[in-house]
Length: 364
Image 1 (cartoon, helix red, strand yellow):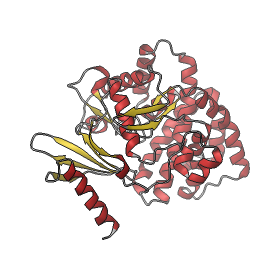
Image 2 (cartoon, rainbow, N blue to C red):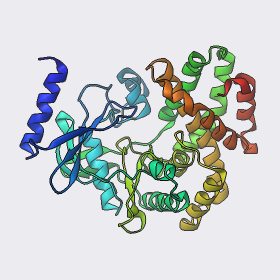
Image 3 (cartoon, rainbow, N blue to C red):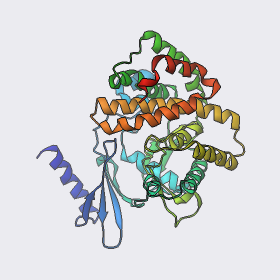
Image 4 (tube, rainbow, N blue to C red):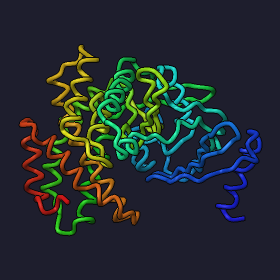
């Protein structure tokens, strides 16, 4: 039996044990991860079947691991990604639901085998609704309300739910550095006219080191980490912040509150206008009057520039290494967001670096 047939038999046995062996299974479109999803069609409802094969990815970061130990384990440990672990999803979903937020309920799970059956929150992704003409402003208003709910509670060091536990590590300097440096390696492979020599790399590090320090020092709130319109579902029958269905949160960390704001408002897959960005930031400060607006905005621009640079690097890698050319279409939008961040006068040195090493003709 080959690996795919063996995995299919394992999945069928899991569903049979859960009393779902005879239901119709509909494969769903995948994303950039190693997870696979199916929709299960029952007589009276639909469910989601998550399949994350164990050992497909490098190991996640153990708490207390040194930088050398993380480097030896690989990219997931360096960046503090969960490696798709189902126990991370279960524990994080449970914590979010305890905060009154709409993460999917976990109905059946075998974390060791990387399988789970989840509540189906539906098809009304923010991105699809907006594409169909729904007013985006109320959707972003509620997304900010949900974000504020996450930021108002001090997160525990370990998330636990229904027998699953997962450490909520800090988005620290090494994780931020790992993400930020991807662009140096992979953008020249997408744009062969570019070349970052040792001098350029040294200048890059000198600019980013203090920004990363601000990111780690400000890492005090729960961070979804992939908080954008493709991972948010509109649930109009629920109340308040619970109207926002949450997906793809298993890589959660404790991070600076500006990080998820950047993920939402610097959305790689859809245009977020400067007007919606301003409205969303105003709403955030109205709901969190204790926040220092000037300092938050300075950090939002700086960490937003780091986040956008990171995504540019990741998408360059997806195109060149993983043969996923569709990600090239997102690049112009990301450069627009980066320009918005770099308009902050405090980031003049960073703007000059990009102007020198990535001229306008290469920002496509």
